[in-house]
Length: 457
Image (cartoon, rainbow, N blue to C red; front, side, top):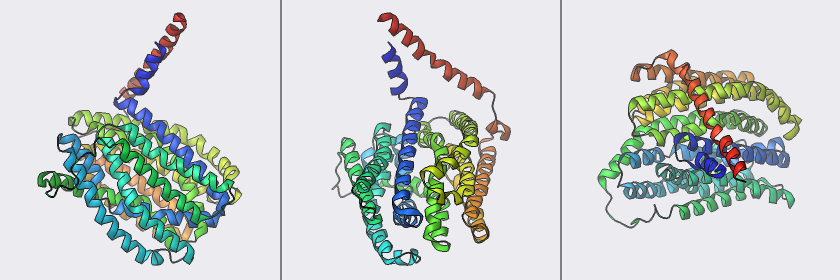
C-alpha cells in the first residue's frame, strides 16, 4: 500500500505532480550545472572561464533570436487542433533546416567582429562550435515542445537533464586526463548535444512517423503554426534579448575576465529560479484550452505561492552562497559578490513575471506580453549604458533588477486592464494558504500508507 500511495503521488499526470517532477529536474539541472561551472572555473581560471563562456554564448543567443516562436506555437496548436499534429511537426522541423544554414553562414562571417576582444584561437573555436551547434539546439527546442504538447514530460525533462549531465561527465574526463583546454571542452559540449538529440528523436519516434517527403504542405496547418508563432515570436525575441543583452554588453565593453566573473555569479543566482521555471514550463501546455477564469486563478496562485516561497529561501541563501562561492570557485570570484546579491533578487522577480505571462499566452493574447517586453527591455538597455561604465558588473546587475521590477508591475497592470483582475488580489489571497495546507495534508496519505504497510508486515 505504501508503494502504491507514493507511486500515485509521484507518477500522477496532474498539474501539481508534473510541476513537482519538473521542479526536481530543475534542481538536478541546477546542481549539475553548478558543479560543471566549478570544474571549468578551476580548470581554466577567471579569464579562461570567460573565453569558454564566450564560445558557448553565441549559439544559445542566436537560437533564441531565430526561433520564430515555433516551439510555443507547436504546443499551442497541437493542444487546440487535435489530429493535425503531423503537419505541425513536419512544417516546424523542415523550416528550421534552411534557417540553421543561413544563420550559420552569417555567424561564421561576423563572429570575428562580435568577439573582437578575444584571441584568434577562441574566435575560430567559437565559429565551428556555433555553426555545428545551431541546428542541434533548434532541434532540441522543437523536440522539447513536441514532448510538452503530448504531455510527455519524461522526455521533456530528460532532454533538459541529460545535456548538462553529459557535459559534466565529459568535463570530468578531461580533468582526469589532464586536458585543461577550452577547445576540447567545447567539443565535449557539441558531442553531448548531438547524443541527446539522437536519444530524444528515438524516444519520440512514434510521433515522428510521418511523411517527411510529402510535397504539398497543409496550408491551414502552416498558417496556424506560423500565424501564432509570428504573434508570440516578438515576445520570445525580446525575452531572449532581455536575458542575453547583459552578456553582449560585457562582450562589447568589458574584458574576458569580467565575463568569467559574471558567468559564475549569474549561473549561481539562477538557483533561486528552480521552482518558478518549472511552473512556467508546465503551466502553459497544461492550461491552454481551458476557460479564462480557471487559467487566471491557477496562474495567480502559482505566482503568489512561488514568490513567497522563493523570498523566504533567498534571504539566508544569498549569504551562504557568497561563502560557498569563495570556497568552491576561488577567492578571486568574491569580487563579484555584490552582483550576485542583486542578480539573486532579480531572478525571483523575473521568474514570477514569466509565470504571470503564461496567462496571456494560454489565452492566445501574447501581444500584451510583447508590449511589456518592449518597455522593460528599453529601460534595461538604457540603464546598461548608464550604469555599466560607472559600476561595471554591479551596474549590469542593478539594471537587470530594475528591469525585472518594471516587468512585473507592467504584467500585473496588464492583467488588471485585460482580465479585470484586482491588483491586490494578484499579490495576496488568503485562500492560497488554505490551498497549500490542503496539499500538505495530502502528504499524510504517505504516512498512513506507511503505517498500513508496517501492519501488513
